[in-house]
Image (cartoon, rainbow, N blue to C red; front, side, top):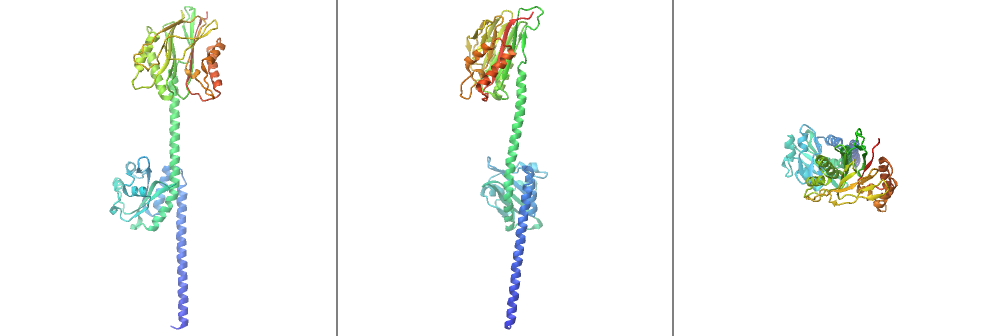
Length: 461
């Protein structure tokens, strides 16, 4: 070969080598573009929804398509139990699959979740880490698979696996790299969807609880008599005296433990009660309902208030219970003005005398209901003259606090009662609550409030 021929050959080889390098670059660029487009496709798919169930479907469908695999699955991590679970499983045996749980470290998916390493397996049945727990449930043979961790903010939240490369091929190392690449946006979207799902469930649970509390409020208020009560209500015999009773209640929460009741005993006797259950909320409301049911169910025409509370206390007392109720109940003979009453550790009522005096009603006190099993409650007696008024209240009035943690107290209450002595019952109840609210200056109500007023007055002829 002469020198010219050699030069031409070298030139041709150089051209061919340059073309090959250019072709490889072009192919590499095309492959990189294809990979970028696939990642872009995945990002579009997984960011098209915030709902976890829809997102899981999109992840599995998109992963199977891009990896040219027959199937795909997402298995999430339950940190509290140290397990993996299928939050969503498609197909006729989806319910059975959702029942399956794998321990962290169990099976190939468990190994990936434990180590944080990706794995490519050409023959699944021959791998020592293989667990057939899922395959047996769905009767689906797994030939080969890829499994990669889903990592968000440095934490493994699940694993993504694709099963059985189509056309009988095996997954390649490049497939591993591609699946790891698409796992990153998938993990970020999945964590956002999980947070949104948890928020939705929390919101739904809160709304359901609020709805149930509104129902509980209606039920609780249904226990209490509404409006006022006049005794006697039949004036055909031209009675000389009558009694009028009215009450107000405002729980600190949706439901509470304060309660009241009033009803006739015979033609001319009035029974009334005001109580305050320890604690607030649902437990107090349940204890209140039981107490009111017992009071009404056990009261008879022959029974005195002390006998009633003794009987009710025996029913309420439980060795392992911390619940109790302070209570004041009375039985007023409207004709004579005789008031028999029993005080179970309650706030001292006030009597507003016709002459203008405001005095605390004192007498023998007993323990709150539910504190001591064999407690014998004693009756007290006082006379209400025509024009006298009895005020019962719970400690939500006297112990109401302002921003300086000062309590409303007995002195303020007595001053208000003296000032509003001649007010109608409705006006008096309104003024008591208004004055407490003014004193607390908008502070959150910390305890239930209840007030009951009993007037003995001359009947209208």
